[in-house]
Image (cartoon, rainbow, N blue to C red; front, top):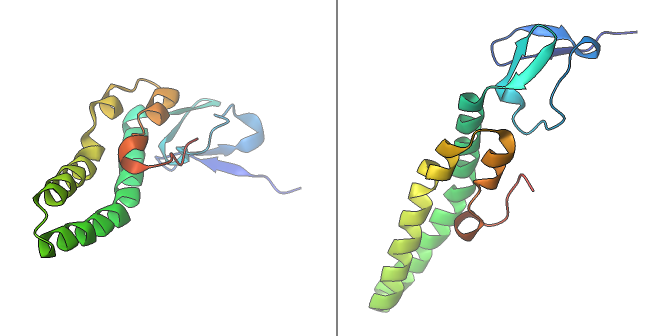
Length: 123
């Protein structure tokens, strides 16, 4: 029977059957091996989370550019202002204070701002 190895963020590996690991694999890239226990490195998990925010917001920003251009063509000041506000919220999303304040993975997942980014990929 082949052995399955778990590799942590630093390249350390261990026999998967001999370690205790988190059930949630969303932040596997933040796993850190200490003896026979794998835990999440919160700093690394936060970076993974921010990268996911950036990935999700890219098409939202593109779509909002179209909305702004239509408002510009129609000379609709209210629509332009709303679009500028929405784009600013999207740009600011990776710097949300809730991300930095998260002390565990559950708190980090709860930091997903559905009002700006839509449905959470962590739900």
